[in-house]
Every structure is written in C-alpha cells, then in structure tokens.
Image 1: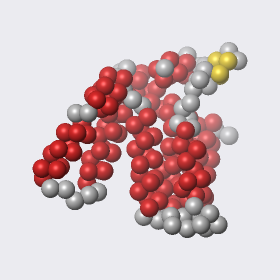
Image 2: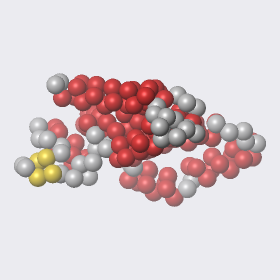
Image 3: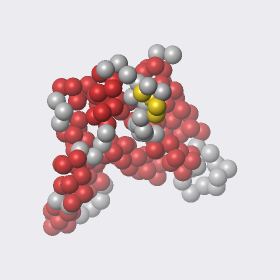
Image 4: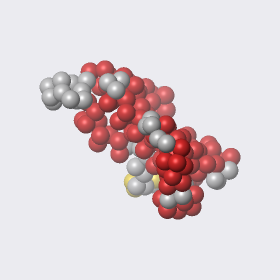
Length: 171
C-alpha cells in the first residue's frame, strides 16, 4: 500500500487525497522520504525497516544484565520468531521505524528526559499519525499527578512537528 502512495508522489499527486478522494494514507510527511529510497530500489526501504527493528532489538537487549546463555537465547528468540521472519523479511513491516521511536520515548520518559522524548515522539508523528494518541501519556511526568505537566516534552514535541511541517510544506 505504501509503495502505491510513493508512486503517487513521483507522479506529482497528493499521497493523501487523489482526485478528491482520501487515499487511506495514515503516514506522516516524513514517511514520504522513503519514496526516494524506493526509487533507488523497491526493496531498499524494507532493508531500512529491518535495520530499524534489529537496532531496536540490540538496544533493548543491551539495557539489561544477561548471562551469555540468556543473551544467545534472547537473540535467537528475537530474530527467529515468526513476527520477524514473516512480517519484516516478507512484507517489510514499515511500522518498525515508528515503533522504535516510541520505544525510545518510553525509556527517555522513564529517565525524565522530556526534551528528547518529545523530539522523538514528534518525529514518530511525522512518520505516522498513530503515535499522536500517545501524546497525553507522556505529557504527564512519571510518578506525578496529572497536574504536573511536562512542559519540556510539550514544547519539544510541538516544535519538532511544526518544524517538520514547515520543512516539507515550505509554509
């Protein structure tokens, strides 16, 4: 489906509305940059999606203390599971980029790094609109009441989204 939307881009059409009809595109404006990689080779974006998944996996595994046996087992479980083998290698699951960004947002929020969390969630929204529903969950500081808003997260999130919109639209 996303390759069809990239074809629209290269044909000069709007990837969200084509001939007055919504195309069903749930992807943000930054996702369209993958169209250029698709133009180089149709499988190139899939390679980038797989790399995103792999880097996230290695990073998650590095965040905990594991014995060498546990590391081997987790590595095999992570990379030989059906999700990876079918979804990523066969279909090139593009949500891995957004999922990786959201994973980093969770960790950064737990570590009270609101500015960086806001930046990465903003980038996630620019790739796909779905992370926008997570915004309220991260806007409240960890362990605090709803009255303790994380202003740095709020400011960095909206700054990235607005700058991204400005960069792409030129307005």
